[in-house]
Image (cartoon, rainbow, N blue to C red; front, side, top):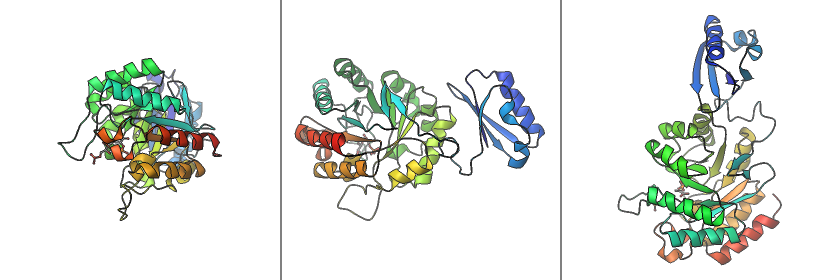
Length: 331
Ligand code: E4P
Ligand code: PEP
């Protein structure tokens, strides 16, 4: 059972709940988030039911959930969550296109990619300033200089920014530039990072770990939610299988499954799953057909010169076709 406190709840209200639960023989785990406090209860649920916890001062909701991911579960949530990123909705009836360079390389390259994205109707700009690379010798991103470029490009194009954070120590810095934090596949179970992102006061896009089950993915989202941040977007980006023809195997079934299990929006990254430019359009069409809430793609003005993931980056003509699919295919 989980108690969600309202934003006006005082420390006395919280202490009182802990007392009530403890007296009833249970244990209360209090997590104070930026905008709300969450109290997880462990013990005899039937005994808790008799306490009328909902009526106690400061309580916003009491959730009895049969799954381990209590806050992100569809249980107790009649409506699906719509996450707003710099005013742009993800979820509900919207199909949100997010596009931009895999990595921020130069101001010119980032602005050119952002203009391509905006011309195609993308509502958000993606771009990594901190790149998680397999090889320590590969381009690792520009760091804060990359964040500054993103902020300048946002000012120029009006596109809010989605950018990855890879280290808990950088969360505050990245959040001071970003409109949405991205947690990548390699960090899906970096619990300290998830918790720090949950406290950063920014929406979070959580990519599925390349070897994670859907339940593990939702439990990772729960770490963010438990810190008081329910503005989470799940992103299916392909999983590791025996198949070598694609970079990863896009698990399209994860979209409706995650939407059935969770109230969070689910988007798809056809670039990192297929790993090849020619696969991005068909995989995007498939993602839209299966009900994804959005698509996130890599674009680059000169993919052959890209410092990261050039073979999967779209050029303007591909992006226009993708934008057509996003506009015309029934969601
Ligand atoms: C890109 O966004 C990732 O950093 C990239 O896919 C990492 O892959 P690699 O380092 O194995 O090339
Ligand atoms: C990315 O989108 O930049 C990225 C690194 O993707 P993933 O974590 O899915 O590999």
